[in-house]
Length: 350
Image (tube, rainbow, N blue to C red; front, side, top):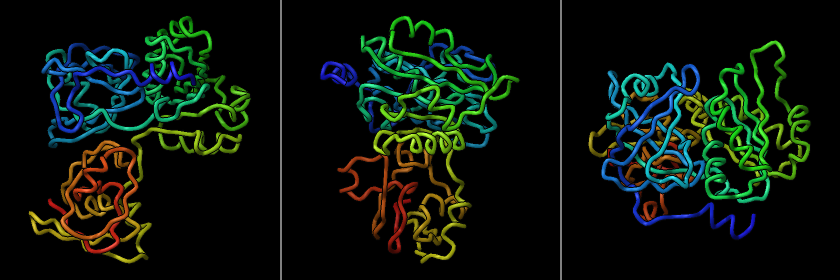
């Protein structure tokens, strides 16, 4: 990647949507992409700008009949267009996505936090990319490609897009337009539920992308898909430092508790409510909170979004976050319970 390209990826403006607190976004438009998938165009209520890197996400506070939930959605729109953002959401069984589909109409207002996360060329600068996406996991890839086209970056990328059927490829028509604007972009659509479908594995992947080991691989999709792509990429010779992924599909708290059943157990206390519960040293504090049936706002469960950020009064933890907390916040005593495991008894400001 040239210095000019890197500067274009990192382009910034001055007025910003507040990145460290919740703000309000107004829905200006909503439309269907494919059956069961809608895109929402959101702009800051105070007319500020939303500066973001391609591949980042935002956390949304959604009011549902069951209460308030926080959910993370990748920004699908170009980072070169900071007057508003687009999120593309698949209707699922969870209350958050269903509520957006039913209630997020033009004029509706929603609270949001971010942008957050590290994913894409800014985090993994390179000259060539292989982008692997399944279903709505194509949204960060669309942001990357849309940004490159808008900023005149001659991106060398292969997008392998997986969907159940040919009628479920998100952004299919636009991708053909992007190919015309970026001659070194190629798109390989693959289906999983049609008679001619071929299962994507290491052999197929290296046939589609013969120089895979020489590219940076970025992957987004369901957990099983990402596990397969990760194994295939590493097996094909892609170095771990040139493999990145983004997903919000993670293990359940019950699985974490079971995994830590035979390890030392610490006590976690909520200072405000006086509630206490046990947490194994190998279990995340958030996992133990959920297993105890206690409330704590959370979303990504991977240390990316910052939704669960909590002040720690006392105790020691080990924490491996992914950009959801700043060093100055850590120095002041804040932690992310979703990626923190206790080394001693802990007291949290909850």
